[in-house]
Image (tube, rainbow, N blue to C red):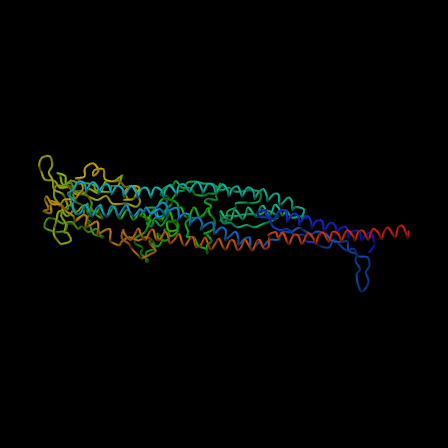
Amino acid sequence: MGLLTSFNAGVSGLQSSQAGLNTTAHNLANTKAPGYTRQQNINTDMYYQTFRVTDKSMMKIGYGTTISTVRQIRDKFLDDEYRLEAGRQSFYEVQYTTVLEIEDILGEMEGVEFADAWEDLWDTMQTLSTNPENITKRELFLAESEAFLEKATNVYDSLKKYQINLNTQIQAQVDAINEIADKIVVLNGQIADAEASGMENANDYRDARNLLMDELAKYTPYDAYEEYGRVTIRVNNAPLVEDDRANHMKCEFIEIKEYDPTTNTYKLTQGSPMYTVRWERGGLGDVYRLDSTYNETNEADIGSLPGILMARGKRFGYYTDILQKVDENSPADQKLLQQYNATIGSSVIQRIEAQLDLMVHKVVTAVNDAFAPNVAATDENGTPLLTDAAGNPLASAVVGGVDLTGKKILDAYHCAVGADDDATMGTEVFKRRTSDRYKEYTLKSPVYMKDADGNVVPVTKEGKDAGGNPIYTLYVYNDEDPKERGSLYTIQNLEINPKLKANYSYLPVKGNPAAGKTGEYDWSAFKNAFETWQVKDVTLDPNALAKYGVEDYYDVMVSSLGTEGKVWKGIVDHQTKMTENIEDRRQQISGVSTGEEMTFMLMYQHAYNASSRYITVIDEMLEHLIERLG
């Protein structure tokens, strides 16, 4: 090899060593930089020149070394694993935080329990039952009833407010995702431009992009792949980042569709004050599907944004959401159960709202049914249960032009009446704001039916018209219709009966004159209410077989919420440890070790010095040849 050619080897050594020093210095300067990945020079032979070929060998001269690439020391598998587990951690952190917030709303954390309200109502009813003629105790009972309803309304309104306020968090996270997408688009262009020549890697730009993708994984699940330096990101098969464009998300108010078993279709039933997340780009629709249960198998439990949407639900919860009877052999019932599990069952806020509403519904209807008891006018097949005065069944359920098929009517014989002069009957304590308890029909003749003891008793109230002629009032109960919110005894639709607040004497506490109880007070209404409260006939979860009375119900509801919170806390702790372990493994590979980098710096310095001395020797040799032997 000629001496002049030998200069190339020395110069390339200087250049490679200098590049190594630069890379090492860059690593050391970014030791604490978030998201920085350790860089490493890859040296390769520059090229060889053949100067002699024989039948046995080929002789070549090497021209030194060069830097083929400056690569990042990074493990893509660990990146993917970290983003998956970090997203799952964020999802369950939202669930746990939501449970804590609900516990605060219920007052369990401060020792002021919602249960106190209905326990006070229970105690007041017991006190009133011992002395129903006492007007002061009737007033106290109505005051406690109002306090119970006010407490229930406050708790329910707080849950609703919490649901709606989550719109702020949803909007903030959508804005953050859009901002990340925009930044990734910019970095995609910078990386593609910098690497277009194929001569270098845009490592610092890649670090910035990877850090953004780590952050994005905490908000939403996504799939990503890279082509020609540009990364494409898809969220639920829709593009968030594509080529040089970001497809933004936006927030819109939800439209509710519910399953109708009669038509086997989903129908639009109402709007909602809550946000859903949709794509701004037309035709892509909703970003997330919130109509399926979440678990690790379908990877629906990833990202804080889906976590918020799932925990919040699509609308407010009502007692009608919790199915009380599910027939395993009924496809329609199984469809409704599936819908419950995918919506109310997956939303902790909506489920608690529905459970609370169910408890209040049981308390309210127990009190109302005790003071204004109803009886069925027909059986399940539509056969009339009404009779004439002799006890003979009526041929038709149409009475006085009123079709009573499937209807309930006031038990006008066994019910208690008010202490007013008119012995008013059918007065309920808790009234629906937009619906009266009964629709009254005036008949010319009485209607009868057989009671539980087989006695023929009237179910109409006898009175007189203006001319002194006898008339009979039939009280037909206005049924609750799940499709009409205004017909339901639900928290948001209840008030204390204004008629009772104006005059306590309307409270049915006296014996019914029709039953021969003239002038005496009747405590059977209180007895019926107490018994109904204790009947275990409601379930917290349609997937479970256990049923509860009012006392057990609330305790189980709160303890189930606490248990759920502990489960979420356990998952959060597990995910936190897992995420930290993966990050530690990433740092072992990608992180910068100052000790290791100092070792490399010394190595490159020695290599630089060696190359420098090598060039000095070649220079001296050339000088000797030229000046002494020339």
